[in-house]
Figure 1 (spheres, one colour):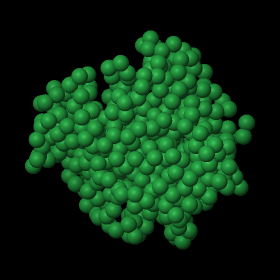
Figure 2 (cartoon, one colour):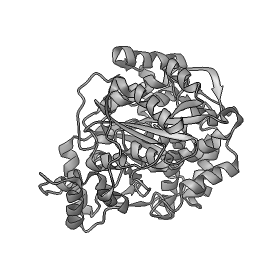
Figure 3 (cartoon, helix red, strand yellow):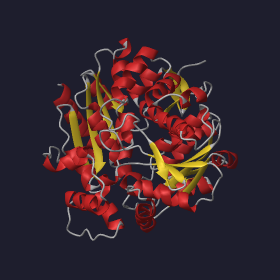
Length: 497
C-alpha cells in the first residue's frame, strides 16, 4: 500500500505523514490527502471492546503509517491523560431519544482539544526525524474562537515550537477572548485582527504561500506550520471520537454491532464532519453525516445546489465558531468525491479565489448528497433550542451544539441511532446561554453571567473557565489584516532569536 500523502491540487510531490504534519499545507496551496484512506479498515468488534486511548492508537496507526507503534502509543498517552476531566475523554450521554457526544472535557473545554492535545505530540516526534532536525517551527493559526486557545494550550512550552494565533476582533465570546488573551508562555503570541474569521484564515493562507517570507525565516532555521484543521495532524485524531462513540453505543445496547448510525455535526470549517467521512471510509457504519449550519449557511446552500458562493453577507451570530464563509476542509471532501481529479479541484479552488464561487458537476453533487445531508438554524431557533433542551431534557448545551440539535429535531426519524456532536462547554458562552433561558443579561460581564448560569441551572462551570477571572491579560495587540505577516516575523524573533 502506498503510504504517502500529496496535495489535493496535484500529485507531483509525495510526502510522508510526518512531513505533511510539519508542513501543514502543501506548497501549491492545496491540502494533504492520501488516496489509500479506507483501504485499511478498523476491526469494529475490537474497537467496541476497547477504550478511547486504544482506539486512538488504531486510528492514528492507520492514518499516519510512518509513525511507529511505539511513537503513536507515547503520543496517545501524553495527549489523553490527566488533563481530561473524565477517563472516557469523550463520553456519550442521552439526549432525549437521541445521543450527545460530549467533546468538551479537555483542558480548554472545547472539541478542538481532542486534536490539539495530540498535534504537538505528533509534531514533536516528526521534528526528531533527520529531515526536520534543528528546525524551529512556528505554528500559525487563525481561529473563530476555540482553535486558538486549544492551540495555545497544546503548544505552550513545547521545545522547538512557537505558536501565533490570530482571531477576529470583537467576534469571539468574552470567555474565548480571555482564554487567549491570558495565555502565559514564552513561546506564544496572540493578535486580534480587524475583520472576520475569513479575513484571518485567508491571510494565513497567503502567509504560507509567501516565498519571500519563507526564505527570510529559513535563514534563521524557522519554518511555518499550521494548527488549523487544514493540517492532517489535526484531522486524523478527530476520527477517533467517531469510532469510540459507536463503541459506547454498542456497549450501552443502543445499537447492535454493524448497525448504521447518523451523526449531526455543527460545522464551520468542515474539519469536524470530514473526520466522520474518514471514519466511514475506514469501516464505521455511518448512514449519514448531517452538516448543521448557522445563519452563515454557505455549506447548506452548497450541499443543496452544488454551488459554493462565498460572496454573501457575513453574519455575526451567537455561535461564533461557525461564523465562516470559506470552509477550507471542504477541499479534501471534493477531492475524494471527484475521484482524485486534482485538476478539477485546483480549478474549483481557483474559481473560488478569483470569482468567489464554483459549481461542482452534477454527478459529483449526487455522490456527495448520498453521504452528507444538511440543515440550518438561525439565532432565534438556536436560542429556542437551548431553552427547550434544558427545560425538557435537563441538558445544558452551548449555542453551536444547539444549532445541531435544532437541525436534528427537524429531521425525520431515520430508524437508526442519532448522535449530536457537541462543540464546547455552555459556560464558554454563558451570556448567550443565560439569555436563551430567559434571563436579562444587559450590563452583565462574562463572569457575572457564568455565576448566574450556575445559579439558574444548578450546574457548575469548568474550573479552567471560572478561574479566568483572576488571570492577567497578557496579549492586547490589534492589527489590520495586512500586518499579520509582520506580526509573525516579530513573534518568531521574540520566541526563537
